[in-house]
Length: 176
Image 1 (cartoon, rainbow, N blue to C red):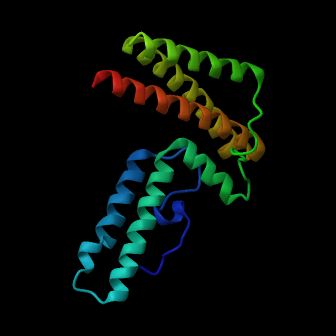
Image 2 (cartoon, rainbow, N blue to C red; image 1 turned 90 degrees about the horizontal axis):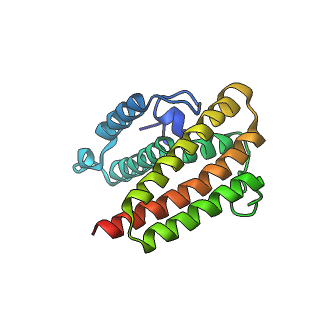
């Protein structure tokens, strides 16, 4: 447990890249959890139990961050000292803002009409747009090291993630 406080990629034995192999991520996470799970240290000293808890917590955080493409990109930028400024830089190209407004309006209409099919179709559209942006992120981060371009893409993905969450929540409400 001496490697506590490594960055997420080092902890999980992965190269610090946007494009990762999810199966390798899952496998590395399970291996670390098996090694440091607090249940293995029930009979240990209080220091060992505390270190185990800290390791497990760090492994959980690393896994959650690297599993989510937006969070992974944000973390990679953080490692480069780049702030994505998602809270205070909401400037977006007009075309992207129009798309967001269109999705919000469609969400309201479909929710009002209780049209799960329309909400599902929007989710597919959002996932498609996310996939395009993730491909752009992979190029910006892994190939070009274009940190500011990547930060702009992360801001877009963050917006899509929020809208997608709202649509998924609305679908769940309507299905209940």
